[in-house]
Length: 290
Image (cartoon, rainbow, N blue to C red; front, side, top):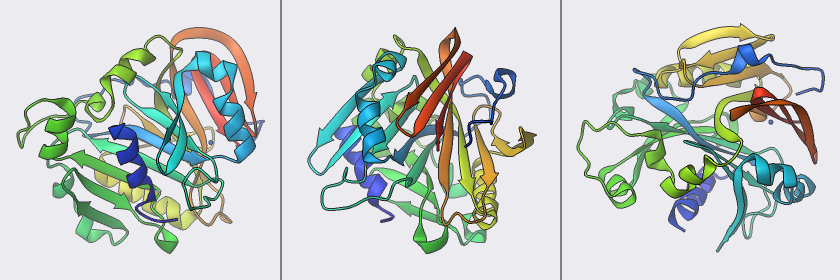
């Protein structure tokens, strides 16, 4: 997978994922999505490459059309399906979404966002040879690099040029970003009319070596609370969390589920979408990817 692949996709966008027996209790998972004092990083968006049939079912799903503010976007060079939350969003591709490339089913990218200007520069990235820091005119990037130069997680931070052109607000070096500064305010406002509020957690399947890198990376950016939930390791910043499942034979990390906070409580319901399923109960939805 090209390491710059998903960054290119973001520029296009901004301009224009277990077994059936696994259950999670709502009391174990619901965490408020408001940024708490001291949290310097928040979840911004995530991408999964689905098989073509599951992608088509998602795009045409009557359930998803009511569940979230969603749409398929087609721009020169790529095609994707989006579900928009109050402060973050989900993105789905199929294997032929990128013109001239064949993507592998299950490929992922998770993008986090800094909530404080100049925060990323102060992290001890030099100590960890699997963390890469880069900058361009628009963003600073702190990326996790696993085997074969795969980049499953990046944290970015707005620079002056991007912040002022995108938000139409004045930038200063000690500014605190809002989670929605990275998104379209119009789309975030539109999401309030739907059931989906925000993604609050991501389940990741990965091998032991990659899990150690992921945990160290997350600790470096402020996800420093650890617990065991339903047999998985949960890494949290007291606001949002990652849930890690060890599968040694996996070559690279894969998303096995999203935890989605809902705007209202509903009766239990299960919706099958291709090889995935969405289970809703109370104010929590979990979207599983087999």
